[in-house]
Length: 256
Image (tube, rainbow, N blue to C red; front, side):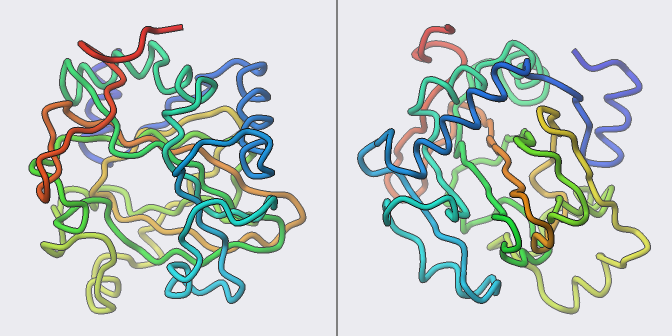
């Protein structure tokens, strides 16, 4: 699907704006469904929920990681959304079938399919980090992320901020994820950063090693998004050899 110009931009910068991928009706359906899940009207046993921190500090988030903790629209993160037919239909969009075939593999699974939320006048400061490394516990790292805005994402409500081209540094630590203050000072200078402002329904393709962060929400409307990590279906968990949910190829749920 990618033109030669798009491919060059992707390889150089580590992100690519895909534009409006979903129809307005699908966007509204996903908004309604995630509200229903947060409010307990739609229930999936064992689904991962994480409330936003009261302090806004990243280090406090893990105190709030658990299952469903009661009806509220202040959940920061909800994972396992490939189990829901509304979200699965979007995960299996033909656009993503072709992108993953070109960039990852023929057979595709998902490491995670998650809702990310910065509630109105809230949200947690997410420091610069990379998505990968031994913390993820995978036997290989052939993956890409598709990040889709469910609301307009702006500087004011905590849109994603990236360092274009930083994926070419590779992982800055074997463990991955957050980086040291020294690395941030060296590689994440303000003058080199880019705020990825995105309209509701638009998607962005992200290289998992791209350095990125986000701030808090300073306005009176939420900043909701849906993030999917697509990877080679041959990927296994290091700790037990387990596989991940397939979305494209043999054994994947039938496209609706």
